Amino acid sequence: MSAPARTGRGIVVYRWTDDTRLPTAEARLALGEALADLGVAEEVREDAQLVLSELVANAAEHACGPYEVRLQRILSEWVCEVADGDPELPQLPQFPPDLLLAPDEEKRGGGLDSLLSLLGERGRGLQIVHQLSGGEWGFCRTGKTKVAWFVVGPVAP
Image 1 (cartoon, rainbow, N blue to C red):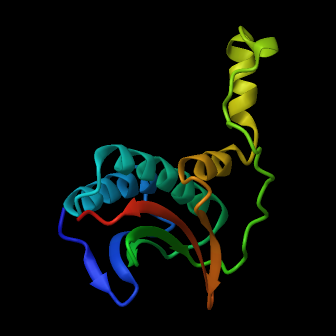
Image 2: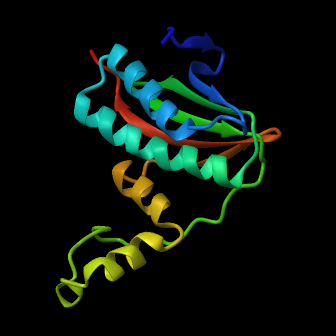
């Protein structure tokens, strides 16, 4: 993979269109490589890749292209952005104040049907984004585009 391009908006890590076959996997791989090159710790990279997977999948499903994944250095942190061609900001679900996937003793042993029911709920992906990013994420509008962003972590010394 070639080196990420630097623009006035940060480092462009990955671009895709509505015709791209596997944008989530490709974006996840590109971000992992870019963060490794920047010296970001493996555990932080893995969480960032999971967050990015959710945001790329949401953009591909609910928005229109073109799409772009960027890294911005803001003060002492890296911020990852996913830009798409839709200026509409999504409705955000209410996030639980406690642990997202804490075990519920009454529902243990629910089997495959219980698991599929849990995973099939809409909005679960943004709850994962919220938890893995420590609540440091959001959406903003920039002209005719929307940007989903999250804080990856501190800049390596």
